[in-house]
Length: 146
Image (cartoon, rainbow, N blue to C red; front, side):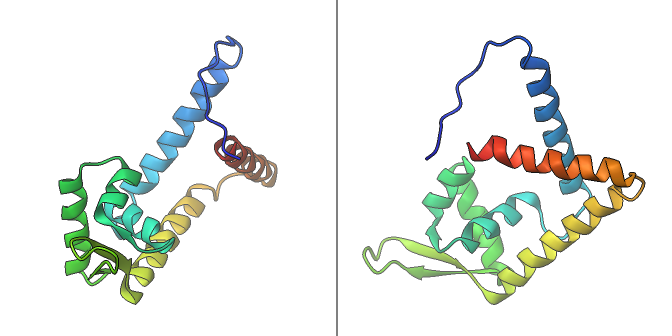
C-alpha cells in the first residue's frame, strides 16, 4: 500500500527532515556530477526501461518532463544502440521503447561507476561510521517506501 505523504507541521521534525532531504540531494548530485559514464537523464530512462518496455509518453510522465524532451532522450539512446522502438501491437500510431542488450550493459556500467565512486567517498570512515551509514541508508529506504 502506498501512503501519500502530507506536509507535517511538527516543529521538531522539520530540522531533521531538512537535513535528510539536503544530504540525500547533495549526495545524489555529487555522484551524478562525478560519474560521466552516462548523463543522468539518459541513465534514468534506461533504469525505467529495465522494468519493462514503455511508450515515450509513459517515460515522460514518469520523469516529469515534456514529451518532446523525452523524445529527444529516446532518440539519443536509440542512436547509441541502447534502446529500440517498435510499433505497439494495439495501436500502430504508438511506438514502444525497449532496452537493448547494449543498453542493459550501459546501465550496469553506469551503476558500477556510481557505486565505485560512492565507495571511494567512504574509504576514510571508521567501521562504526560505516555501520551508521548502512543503518541510515536502510532508514532512508523505509522513508521513501511508505
